[in-house]
Image 1 (cartoon, helix red, strand yellow):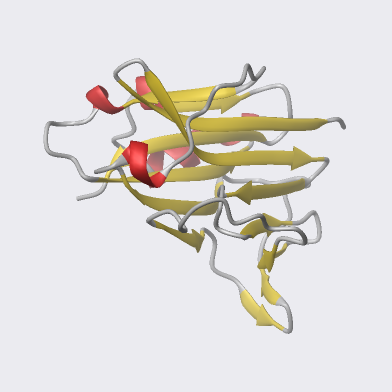
Image 2 (cartoon, rainbow, N blue to C red):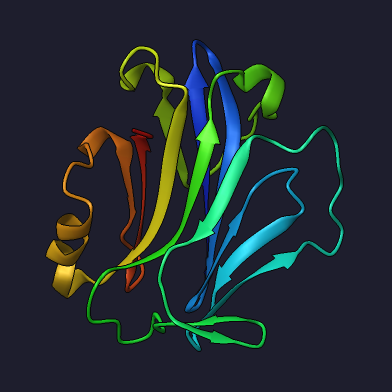
Length: 178
């Protein structure tokens, strides 16, 4: 299976800001936050953990982001042992990023590249006054999409991005933080 990269960016006016990159390599999924210096990964074995980047380049202050694992599991030496994405029977949360969007131009890099897979979230699609959003990354098997909908009942279609060319599919969504 080839590597799939999805960039999550927020549009404010005519500018776009780089919030997150989700990368799938086989049955491994990685969630990278720019300028944070760590990433979260969910591996084919079911192990999930946070790791420091090998060559983190600090270009600016760390962004106002909290990154959390999505699925509970058993504590092991280097992380958490949870479900493998191989032969997954139900949708599982991989991770969730809680992001302050009050000052995008100050806190995040402009996104000025052309990407094949890009989830563009329009800041104006949230209720006026929204200052924090959550971006969730889930693995969703084709045969059990209702398990995602059960766990995430009010996700708007215009704030949901589906990577459907792999199994399980990777679904990324944004919601206002209440």
